[in-house]
Length: 365
Image (cartoon, rainbow, N blue to C red; front, side, top):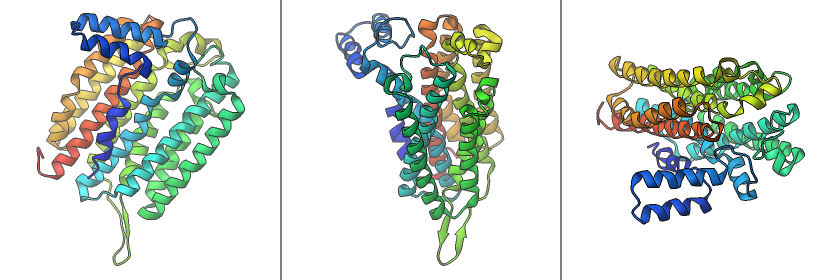
């Protein structure tokens, strides 16, 4: 069963500060501080880590921690796990080795996306003052070469999985998803500079990647030929929800970058509409997320288990809404909004995948 991703996801939504700074929070909790006092300790840790985007010197360890963007790799884990769970829900198919090869390949592709984005933002000057930019830490040439090697290795894993699945729809959709990443950031396109990053993100990680990973569970059978999975309304609905939560991460990542984006002509949505309107859009986006979840449940597009478990993430969605509405104009705090969205994305994806697995086993069908 595709429970591996569900088990791995907590690694990507763990505390957001470097390990050396988490000890202070842990000590405070152990000392029996009340919740309000503990929150103050956590806020202090965030400021020390540079997570609030404040000016001042940051340690190299902190810069490397922020440059690694480990929580962001949930965008590789969630589409794969939800797509695989959809295949298991429909046909009882799950191939563990293929899953982990694809997880590695997806992480490598996201590494290429992050590194090459730093390279091209460095070329345009968008990251000139971004201390945690990988280019500013280790240099452009090394970053570019690492990005290219990551993409090559990622493609190797993807084509291995294609050879096992024998489903051309898988490799076609996953290449389309990668192409969305290319036109998002790479010359001569750089569509993110035209404010088109969010629709590209939705398409790439939602309908394209999630559905592609569903098709990756097709199988070549020597006796009966290739067994192809049909496109189902369940995987389509799941992919839409995954795409929406992923897009929220990208949208919220712009809040603290408006001045830098504006200086180099990068017309992100928040440059165009401002942070106040942007915060309202985040609220509307999360409301739509849960309305769609309920609608898919009512229409029996998703099993009841997905709806019940998805509803349990409502406190995290509420946290994102309240945090963005309160801090949208404060660069020292709004930096953290994208990481709260990562938590929502990972937990919501875990809920969908778990619900699909439970429904297959006759629980809350």
